[in-house]
Image (cartoon, rainbow, N blue to C red; front, side, top):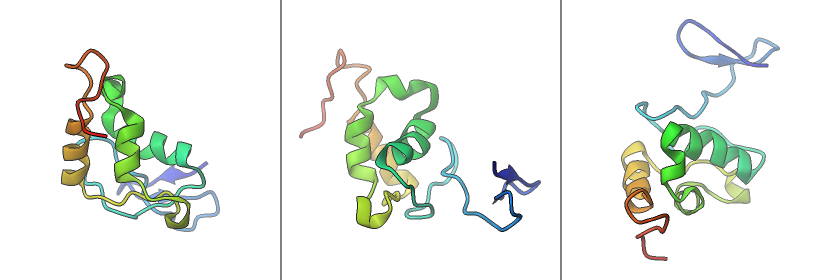
Length: 104
């Protein structure tokens, strides 16, 4: 299991530097800073973690489709923080009775 040092950097169990986790909301997200083995892992660690307790208020799959690369990209995040939140706002379902108001 990775450990986090005093500066917030993540290290793997072998002591080598590992890439930073995708941060939760309120922290700067950088495109392609981390790659994931599966799309589901990327969704959990990038989209759901960023939305936090409000993830149920968003169409997570629609957001993921716009912010994550595909298999060839290692399911890496492909947008900046500002772009992420603009995309998330398009897929906010909290005021639409569970339906995304974003065009398909």
